[in-house]
Image 1 (cartoon, helix red, strand yellow):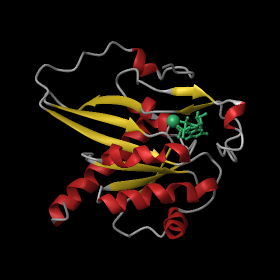
Image 2 (cartoon, rainbow, N blue to C red; image 1 turned 90 degrees about the vertical axis):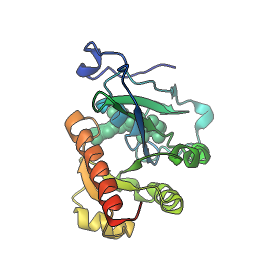
Image 3 (cartoon, rainbow, N blue to C red; image 1 turned 120 degrees about the vertical axis):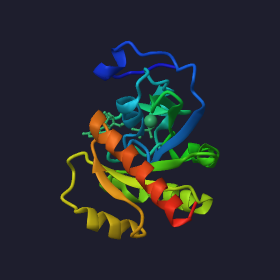
Image 4 (tube, rainbow, N blue to C red; image 1 turned 30 degrees about the vertical axis):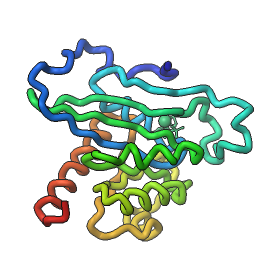
Amino acid sequence: MHSTTSEPAHVNEPVAPLAAGTEQALKIAVVGGFGVGKTTMVRSVSEIRPLTTEETMSQAGAGVDDNNGVEGKRTTTVAFDFGRITLDETSVLYLFGAPGQERFWFLWDRLFTGALGAVVLVDTRRLQDCFYAIDRLEAQGTPFVVAHNDFGETEHSLEDVRAALDLDPDIPLIRCDARERASAKKVLIELVHHVRFLITKGAR
Ligand SMILES: Nc1nc2c(ncn2[C@@H]2O[C@H](COP(=O)(O)OP(=O)(O)OP(=O)(O)O)[C@@H](O)[C@H]2O)c(=O)[nH]1
Ligand SMILES: [Mg+2]
């Protein structure tokens, strides 16, 4: 297991080990198509140096792994990214970034089991790559929000993205930059608000 990019500054700050009084662990999954920024998001918000399972992409993956649109990508997640955020003295949030390549999608259903909710990351250059994630989350009844990870590629409004995804009006859709801690945090907060909304509505 190894990381290939430099650590966000906050990851090198000393971090207390998991508090002894921790009683509640919540799980959030980060899913979406290949190269959409899932590992980047988990790295941005985690308070610990995230466990990642990046492997260098090799010639063997040519023709199997569709890197159309992300030609500069050199590594890919082969199991999960794992990060942690302490919420308070008793609660901790675990973040699981899924592997994005189609050959690993069978792992996702397991990942959603017991999750508080999920973040679906989308890249508007490859919008279709998130359809499977949305289908599975809907099928499993797992609450989710959709975040457009902005690579600076588009002038599409969020309304356009919502229409293209045929997203239910109740499902939050926001824009983010997965590289920015504050932006990634906002996505997680949006998800928590959404879960709370569903609970109040009696849908959970
Ligand atoms: N410009 C820009 N680049 C980004 C952003 N998010 C991620 N990247 C870059 O996009 C590339 C892919 O990001 P990853 O985080 O590895 O994507 P992933 O979804 O984990 O990829 P897989 O696990 O292989 O599916 C990396 O080189 C990131 O630095 C973003 O918001 N803006
Ligand atoms: Mg990844």
